[in-house]
Image: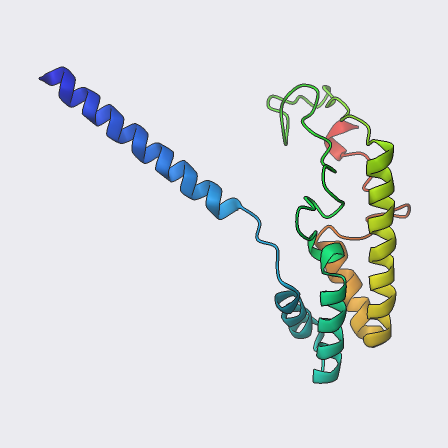
Length: 168
């Protein structure tokens, strides 16, 4: 009888842990904003007037696949653009990473992936040029600052972050 009770308690505990893990995973999933949501956020942050807001909404709908990745587009660069797992099999910050130990390099992008990335970047530049025509100089400057803060756009003089401080 005692074994049955202990088995039931163990099963209930495991079920609760799995349910909680699934709930946490669902919360972490990234929801891509719609063009309308993105436009509303831009209108609020950049103080757009009604005329600007309608033009930005049209632009955001036109470039939805570029801005939000579109259907089946993964991280916005096209299907299959992820580089895959690192050679050591770990993801994110390497567990037990000493300051002397450097992370292994990820696999190189294929020529097709590089072409898709280049095409995506060209489309993004087209979007930015059209957006600049809609916004005032001050609004566009604020837009660029907001995108840099959120990991979009150039991060340094040559458009890259440079070495991590803990890896030098």
